[in-house]
Image (cartoon, rainbow, N blue to C red; front, side, top):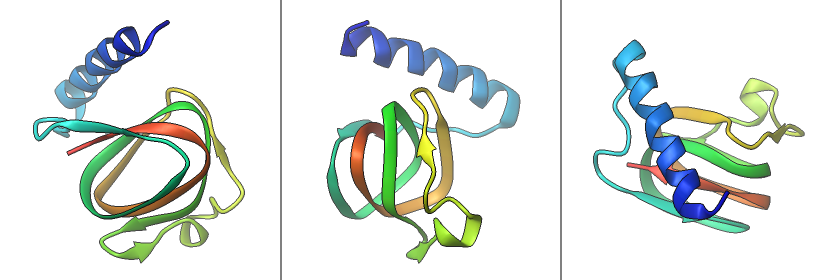
Length: 100
């Protein structure tokens, strides 16, 4: 499946999630991120594009990995990560699409 098809499939999933939960994501756009550190952002959710390991995950400026027992977790492709206001993250391997 190429990137265009992946984005289309995820858009379908996000619409279904929005319809069932009232959560609205992606109305402000989206961006793909791979290994590296992302700071000074305001994302509503992430969708994992390939198995991904985070070394940092900030919600409203607070590190949430250790707080939620996810410091050593590999997030599997297709995982939907809602965050309220995701303000930063660092990826040691993998990639995500981040939605505003």
